[in-house]
Image (tube, rainbow, N blue to C red):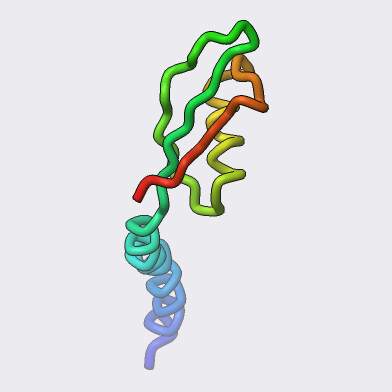
Length: 84
């Protein structure tokens, strides 16, 4: 075999790695649970409802919701329920 072919083989393998990774990751995204989150501001006003995808559970959903509301939500009032 020629040295050109031997050099090209690892390059071809590395070039295909991102495509294979994207194909493998696609089915995992389909099963991400969603949560519906509600909260109130410090003044008692109701904030808009958010639907959040949280791979790691309710605590992650609460954290993402709090970040999306940009600190206007009173943490004790954030309520996230798993969508079925």
